[in-house]
Each structure stands twice: as C-alpha cells, then as structure tokens.
Length: 182
Image (cartoon, rainbow, N blue to C red; front, top):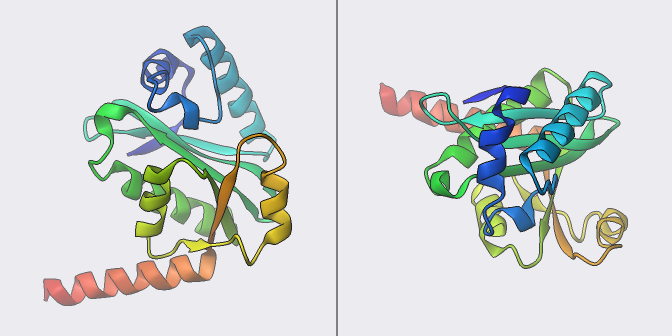
C-alpha cells in the first residue's frame, strides 16, 4: 500500500496528478512528466536530509495511484500532503494510506504532531479529513500558524493530528475489532 518513492513511477503518477480535479490541490505542480521526475528527485534528496518523508500509495495490485508526504519537517512536526488519482478516489485508499503513514511518522520517526492545511474551497478534502477520528481543527488553537499558511493568495483551514489522539483512537479501534472477532 505504501512504498518508498521511485523515479521509475513518475510518468504514471504524473498522468494521475495532471487531471484537472487533482492538479489544483497537489503541492508539486509539475507541468510535464520530466518536471515531475525532477521534483520527485529533489524530494528524495530532501528525505535523505531529514527535511521531508514521502511514500507512493499503491493500489491492491501494487500500481502507483498517488503520494503521501510530510513537508516542512521541524521539531517532530510537519505538514501532511496527500493526493490520489481520480480513478482511485472514494475506494478507501486515502484512509488506509494515512493510517500506515501516520504509524510510520509517530512510531518510527517520533513525530508528535502532523498538520494538514486544506484549501478553503477543497470541501471534498475537508470532509475526508474530518471523517478521521484523530483529526481536529487547529484554526483556533494555532492562530499564528494559520496566519502563516494563509500569507499567500490561497486560503487554508488548518487541522492537526496529535500523536496521543492518534494512538488512543487507533488503539481503541483495534481493541473493538478484537472484541468483535471473539
């Protein structure tokens, strides 16, 4: 479901991210497969320096369908960015990918907070984020950070995933699943 980024998959991923319903919401706004390859190479180098972490999201057959990354890493926190190609949206890949990636961030890389900035007009992503029981609005709790992400033309809502809430929620879900299995 998640794998380390690979330059060989850039052409397939570029085809998915260039769709008009996906492109406005991706961080790496490449205008060609070659440019996307270059941006991905830079991202892989940033990961080697500890500035970002990025994974390719794959479908049930191992085909690349999107990416999930954390950027602007600083002091155990960073900004999450996820996109999934249109043909694969609404099939549960987003929630599964987030669960796996957050486990990696919190328990292998020792992050304490993951932030999401979602464009105000991206209602679909806001609804998807709020479906996750470990996501909370951070507009009021982090006004300085909200002002910082809204300096440009695009306007965002700010959300956060605290490690403790993620752990409590997922541990509770696993316990409920075990009870139902008995």
